[in-house]
Image (cartoon, helix red, strand yellow):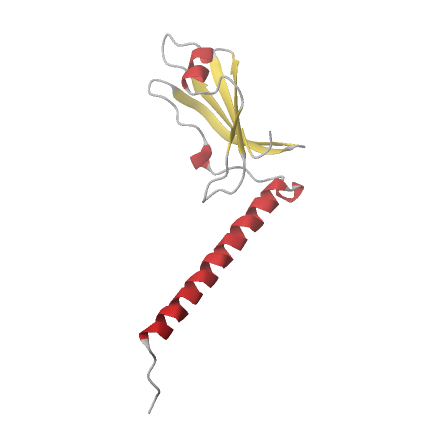
Length: 130
């Protein structure tokens, strides 16, 4: 006959298991963060979810991944709405100046977003490096 386990012992075991799993996930998040902050991740780009939303009326002309000696980044070329200048579009999107976005739960890296008006269009860059 097997000895009976008490509900307290089962609850304690469940708490220990949950604690170990959460601790392991936290360690993995910190490891990913440290890798993104080091030069080992030079080819990494932020997930597409970190690209700013394009307002209604504006349209994406081109989107792609670019790389150079300092790392890689998303480059998005946006055509403003009719009657809107690229500078106005940048202000509407909150990109008049470079932004630094904090890490999130699903993306543990600082993300830098910038925009430059060129030839009547707005070129947006999104990278882990500023």
